[in-house]
Each structure stands twice: as C-alpha cells, then as structure tokens.
Length: 121
Ligand code: AMP
Ligand code: ZN
Image 1: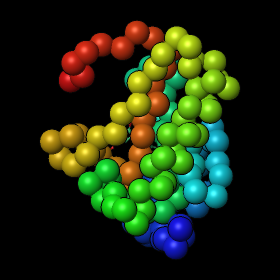
Image 2 (image 1 turned 45 degrees about the vertical axis):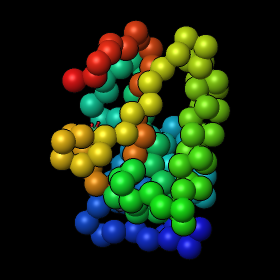
Image 3 (image 1 turned 120 degrees about the horizontal axis):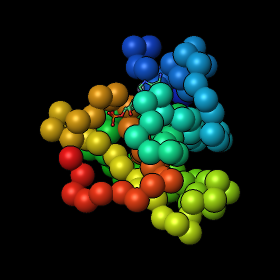
Image 4 (image 1 turned 45 degrees about the horizontal axis):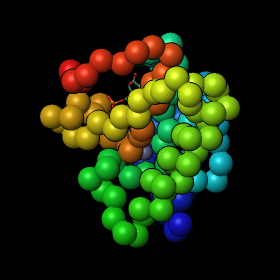
C-alpha cells in the first residue's frame, strides 16, 4: 500500500504509531497498530488503527479497502488469543461529528469482557 507512511504531523494516532506519544501496545504489523484505549469502556478495550492516515470509514475506497479486511483478520486473531472470541465482543467505528468521532484517524474499537447493551448511545 503506497500510503503506509502517510503520517499527518498534527494527528494524535499518527504520533502514537510513530512512538512520539506513548501507548500500551497490543499488536503491530506493517499495516496496522493496536493499543489499549486510555479511557476504557469495557474490561478489555483497545483500538486497531491503520498505519496509513485515513480519516474515517467515509474515506475508504477501492484503493485502500484492503486495510479494512486486514484489520478485521487481526481483530479475529486477537480475540482468540486474548480469550474473548467465544464469549463475544463488539467492534465499533465512530464516524464524523454525529457519530461522535473524536480522533480523525480511522480506528476500530474492540470492546470485550462484559455484556454489551443495545442500542448504543
Ligand atoms: P473516538 O471517540 O471514536 O474517535 O475514539 C477515540 C478514542 O481514543 C477514545 O476512546 C479515547 O479514549 C481514545 N484515546 C484518546 N487519546 C488516547 C491515547 N493517548 N491513548 C489511547 N487512547 C486514546
Ligand atoms: Zn493519523
């Protein structure tokens, strides 16, 4: 993927990926980075982000869609390894203002370790 090193200087998650801001790493490969959320909403709550700076799900196109499949493969693998695949869990991506996205770098929340409620707030 050509935009893998497309870091944005003013982006919090780009800084975390580069290591300029510390994070508690769950997993890393050449395409994505996973780290624990600083404000956990479940006993297990981590974020999986592409290393490429993509703003949100709304910026996914046929040119960069491969990263989404890769991230979900990673989530499925981590869910098994961390032991919550069988019990179940939730994957969430907030998009834009009404979606309550606060960091404009595509990320998937992975929440586990409690029974979730529906509908989400
Ligand atoms: P969202 O509101 O969907 O954009 O999600 C952003 C998430 O990033 C929130 O759940 C925050 O708690 C989390 N967050 C913000 N800053 C940090 C940080 N420095 N390290 C880990 N997670 C963070
Ligand atoms: Zn970024």
